Length: 72
Image 1 (cartoon, rainbow, N blue to C red):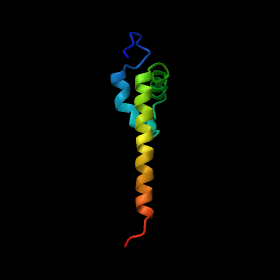
Image 2: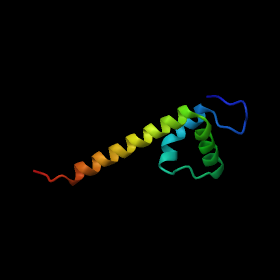
Image 3: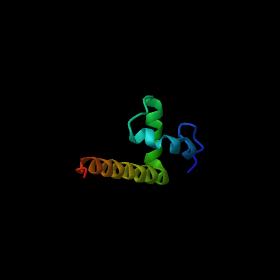
Image 4: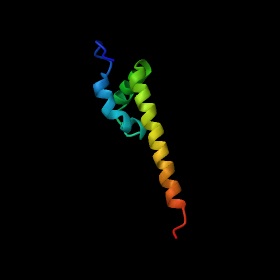
């Protein structure tokens, strides 16, 4: 979704920041607010963020389970 209003980030600007957002690594408050505002109005980007977040949780859980298994 593209916005004509310059106060909104474009999808092309938000997508590369999804992992940074999930990992709480966007330190600039204006950038963080702009990304969150975009997620609030763009269902496609919000869905992408939710899918990537779920995938990261799954990967972390798999890694933790693998590390907790006894070695033979």
